[in-house]
Length: 225
Length: 225
Image 1 (tube, rainbow over the protein chains, first blue to last red):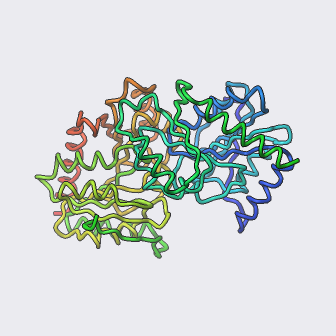
Image 2 (image 1 turned 60 degrees about the vertical axis):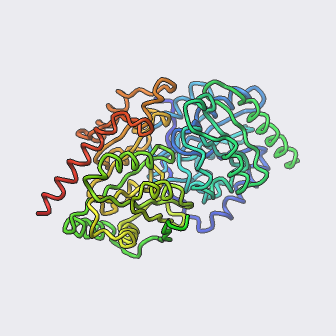
Image 3 (image 1 turned 120 degrees about the horizontal axis):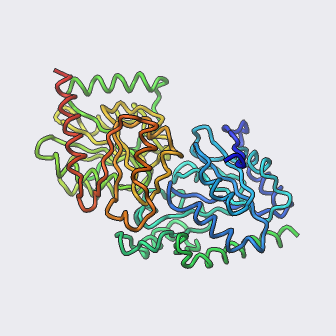
């Protein structure tokens, strides 16, 4: 556990989060570092998807990870075992990250040599959707056991993200989960959202998610030229 | 959908939430109404457990339900189909309820003739743990697919509640979930917490949860005499 850097970050002092987020995004663009803000409920499989993403893209891109949690460093320890640079952020009870808190984590991680930083946000479908972290793109996971009604209950999250991952499709036979209904409900909120039905546990279809992310990173870098 | 009363509640104006919560608890005690604050992640099975609770205790106690969500009335509609009095609360983007917001919902529901009100809080493991709603007792659900590391990541929630329900045990064979580890981690935070491993979907062992709740309601009423 000694190798995990744990940073206590409190709410930012900045009054205008959107301005700070835009500033951070511009800085990352100049550095050619792509920041992915990954959000979901607790236990939807964010860390498992991070591991699959490292597996798929780790040869091509230099990757770093920020793990945000209220407490513990279990996810950071899991990621560190892959040899990936990782910093654990403790949010002091806050259920989201803002741009200033994200910047603090990125400074600790050091982004100059990184192509991709994945920010695993606090497990929560409410607050994280309300704060721009300065990320290049954001994605959310909805896992099968959570139920197909979640776009109805947490519309802001589904409206704000750039991609939706439906995770844990390996357990579809054991749950009443209507994939078509979720896709229809999500697209009512976010008409062009790409949706990837995967199992981060078994690896099924995770290459489709990785392909999308690869394309977004390349577009980000070519825009920066 | 017409029969569902939907109330838009915003953050309370009260500065001292703890004082308001104590006042509400005292008022409910005098009315012999037991208020249960039920919390969990999104999709852990709060509504399914509410239905099982109504099934088990509905002959014995007059029950009302408050459903708190960011949006939609799907849970309230589900509960209404059982013939139970229910009010849907919309929290205006807030990820928790405080005592003032709960009081507003109780006024709409009307508690004088009710023995038990179940408040299904917003799906979230962070913010709801930080606010006393004025409930007689609180309980949380952790569902098997969420993983056994949740007490490590969300310690405040596990510390604050009066009972822990481990739900979706019907899918235990399909997940890496160590029930003993969860119990040990939960009891490290909350040494005497009663823990009920159930499946709200199949009904397995839900009578143990109902028995606990029945005992708490009776104790509440005899204390009020």
